Length: 224
Image (cartoon, rainbow, N blue to C red; front, side):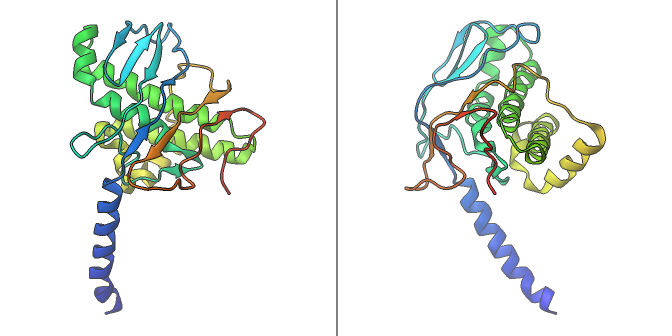
């Protein structure tokens, strides 16, 4: 009987939590230049759009601000923004990239599936770079698993991948059993510069929004 009584409360709480999460908006405050992509893996034509460009095989995300009418990045919707690593950082490029899949496919003469795979791999490499900076070997192993889990999600489920919290446990098990790896596009052990960003929906910074930071092997980024 208690369980039956609790169902409406759980439903109401879940609905409110989902509604709040879906209203997350993250602004990129400064230009963010990512590492150069290995040309043996991808050769990307120099291209420029309003929010994302490629120069000499390096992606760069231009500053953007969400508005009531335009959403550039809503983070890891319905999934943890901070799970050993700041997953939001990967979403800062993945979200704006997904908005322009058709544009890049037409510009480059690629299929949309090829463009999506490139953006998914960039997303996975951002998370792997963050994970590989962690000094503690146990936490680093766990963070790598987190990165592989999110990457597997975007590859399996496309645009809604980093939005489905309910599939995380399944994906984690799949990574453990099948060894779903992230194709390496750059050296993950090199210092990785995170972008400057903020949550549009809050006035103060939260623990899951680190200040701009240069990661290195001497720093244990993982939060306790």
